[in-house]
Length: 224
Image (cartoon, rainbow, N blue to C red; front, side, top):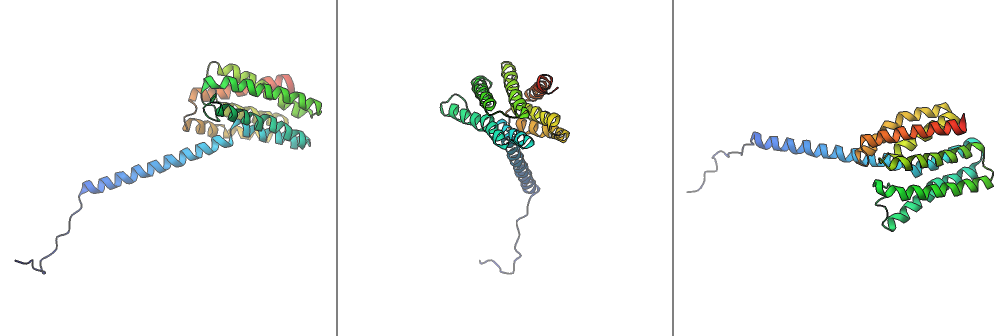
């Protein structure tokens, strides 16, 4: 017997369970997208506020403030480009895991290498008769490195956050007090480092404190 074409067609009914599964999937997908964007933003901030980038910007600002652009560029290369080349070389040799050197036991060699670079750079700038402000910046960099190298023996203090605090305070004390507003960005840098799991809160705090102490020492010895 054939089916009567006049018989009503029964549509499948959607269940509440199916709807709830769809809603849950949408929530999970949205949450994953938000996490991906959050992590991307954190990685961008981490790269922009990387120590080598901050050093380049710092000495270019000092070069502009003193009118000694050439010497500012020399200092920027010596404290930014050269240390990054050193780190990339150590990565190639398998001595460090990544360009942020996230393993504490790998940071000692990096600190030693950069300290040597800075000492050589100080002699170069002396021969070139660098302005006092650039001199102060270079000696501040040396004090910062030595202090962080000592602290790193106990805890992996955040160099990103510590250097940001130190440089912004230095510029605020020497170039313009407006630079002190940059301290308001410190929590953003701290969040970025924790978001990508490169640092814990205690390491962030250690970085902030060490950066502030480095600035205090620099001020007492060089700027006061």
